[in-house]
Every structure is written in structure tokens, then in C-alpha cells.
Length: 385
Image (cartoon, rainbow, N blue to C red; front, side, top):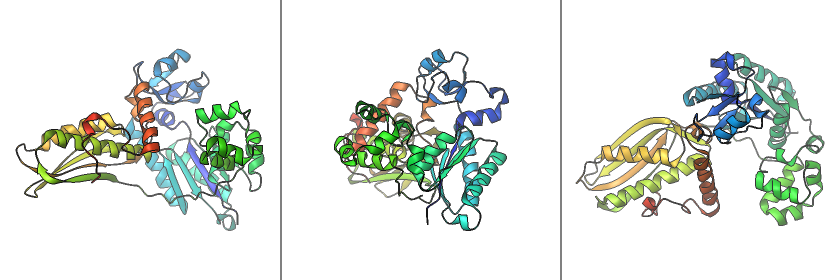
């Protein structure tokens, strides 16, 4: 029995939510992100894209390309609310689903053809979401995640598409290699230098050659280009918090060491958030003194996963919580009220240079380990509690 995998994606999600609040934005070029020229575009409407604007572009450049664009700051809480509404509708309607970002879902409908008709069921679910939330959403149905995700891109805006089993390679063949998940700018440029621009050319490249050029990634890309993807839909469960703590070998009041430990712990947790595509809205600091009395203090913050935002709050809470001259046995940090979401949220508040810096740092951490890069203030910590 062929698998039946649906990929659903809310169209220009942030913009669509803003348009629900202000109908005058309909049909106009809209940019979501930091309002200053040093800010970055977190999301943009199709009307703005027609001018060459795209996500993560410096706001100054976006305004130059599209002077008529309306810039909206963005609302973290509102976007999270609508994402949860869509999640609840999907949860009630299907047996297995995976939420991969704040606006993107995979659904496994394998076996439902015997009862309902998978494509009909997916279409009805799409209509329910649009009716109950007012948001446009697109989907594609195929035998695997890769083909369905590419199909959704072809179904947009606000459409739906079915790629029957056995037609995966034919469907993918005429498309640009940019459409393949995992093909970023550098990989695209490398493949273009090999004369590969369309997927049908990539389908004909020997898999051994791609492995030689791109390593294991080359094998994966070749399989995706040929419509081969056996990855399962992972049942979704919302992680509520992440935390870490450290117990010291000797109770201490060493301010430098305590702060360095908190810096290192915060950086590790922030990297974990970004790796899992999560954002936090609540920061908690924990202190246990030598007499084993334990105290915590927490605060709410705008959704974020960026080190500098979280570090400022951790340091502030620690300074308020610590009763000086008392020996400390343990410190801990916890991030809670987690939601799905990428660094797009942080782009409301940060510059392009800072966003690029975090992306570069995370790339090095993924390659060489989470401790490959750390602030000088975090150099004392070497153990995860």
C-alpha cells in the first residue's frame, strides 16, 4: 500500500494574520519586520515579492525595491494564537500529523482511501481551516514528504495539488533544483557550476558523482530529486520547556565563575531552541544555596531564541535573586512557554548582520559541536548540568 502524505502550509502566514486585523492591507505589498532601516524582513506578501523582496532581506533594501510597501512590526502573540488554532483543527481531524514550524504541517493519511478518499479528506480539512480561521492555506498530497512539500509550493497561492504514486519523477523533472528541500544557495551554485539547473538533469547525474562532490548530502539530494523519501511523519507533541542546571563541586560565591556558567548554559539552551525551531516567552533562573534552600525567579519576554535577548534576562534575574555572601551550591536556567517558530520572530527586533551572525555561529556549532563557539564570559563552563 502506497503511503499518503499531505504537506500543508499557511500562505504568507504573518501577512495573512495582519490582513485579518486590517482588511485595507488586502492586495497591497506588505512587509513584516523591524521598522527601522537596520531591521530585516521577517515575511512579505506576494505583491511585495513581485518587486524582488524576500524574507531575511534588509528592510532598507526592501523599501528601495518596493517604496509603496506597508511595513508592519508584527505581533508574536497573535501569530502564535492563530498557529495554535490551525493545530487544534488538524489534531481533531487526522490520525497522525507533524508540525514542523509555526505555519507548516505534514499529515499521514495512509489507509484513509478505503474509507473517505485521501485527497477529498485533505481538501475538506483545508476548507475547514480557511472557514474557521480566515487564513489561506495550500496543500499537496503524494507518497512522501519531499514531493508533497515541493507540490505545495507549486499549488500556492491558496491552492491544492495531488501527485499520484508513480508520477513523482515526472512531476519534479521540469522544476528548478532550488525547489528541492536542502538545496541552499551554496549547493545551488555548486550544482549550477556542474551544468545542473533543472531537476531532470539532476535525476540523470550518477549518485556516485553527487556523493563525491557533496558527500552524504549528495546522496540525499539525489534521492529527493528522484522522488525517493521514506522519512516518516513524526507524531507531534508540544515541548513545554527546556532546562539545564549545574551543581558545583564546592559551594561558591565566585561571581566571575557563576556568571560564566550562566552564560554558557544560556547559550547552549538558546542553540537548542534554534535547532528545534522553537521560541521561548518565559525565562527562569534557579539558585540552590549551601543550606539546600532553593529559590527561583522568572519573567515573561517577547518570543525569542537569540542569545543576547535571553542572556540579558538571565543576568537580570540572577542579580535580583542572589543573596550575596551566601554560598551557592547549584544554578539552573529554564526556558518555557515554548512555541514553534524560527528566527523570523527575532527579525522584528534585529539587524540583518546580527541574524547572519547567529546563523553562522549555529552552522559552526552543528559541525563542530555545541561548545565550538562561546562568549569569553562563558569559557569557565565545560559541563552540562
